[in-house]
Length: 304
Image (cartoon, rainbow, N blue to C red; front, side, top):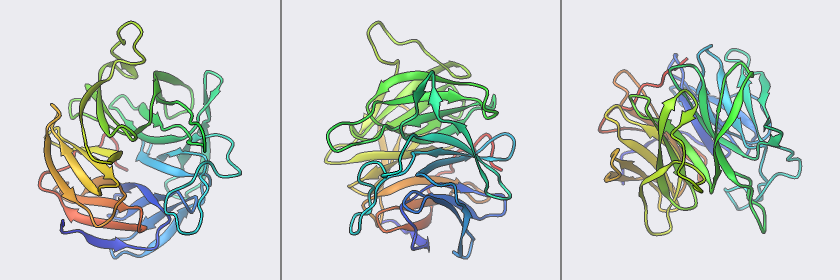
């Protein structure tokens, strides 16, 4: 078992942690339809009543926070995971969150006339745009297709760049910005896409849905959630059900698998003076954990 210290408890399926300039952590609570701030001493306060199902979160070039909102899920007593869409669900969206007030503004809810289903995670490139995934809502007898998109933070442009995709979840960029990594939940596979320009992936082969290639995966009954890049180019993948953070090399080998004190470690982000402090959302138990990672995380292009 890894040396994880519990920083905060009582969270409603936490996800999307980001390290703020003051050392606090802002994370999403999907179950509670809100964003919360966790102070360095573990004190937790509500930051934004954004509604829906807040999931992935990132700072943009204007200092604002950008949020992938899955539109809301139905939660019942005794189940930590959401069970299908919330009764009030209409669509998923991308929102802009005011970094001072927490006020949420709708940025995107559809692409080319097709509504977003369940936006999940996002990552900004050096040009100031962002890639984001749409996991696709799961229903009792069917599911929406997932996809990968690219958008600008001013609300002026969003486009579909890989569709369909089974269940794209976490996404991150390589240190040189030339590769987009995406974790697929249901297949527990880590995919890589070659980037030819901002929001432009290498063209797929004829009849292929997209140009991604599988780097690696996990066996057993594992499922993949969010991911984060390390300074050395490796990729940390939050691995569900089996309860690990799995670190892959860019060529797909498993470098290490660190056991977590929770079956659903859903997300990992890095901070601290040396970028080795890892914050991990332990979602089945509703906790935020912190530990020292062996190698530094990659500094994001915009970090507040």
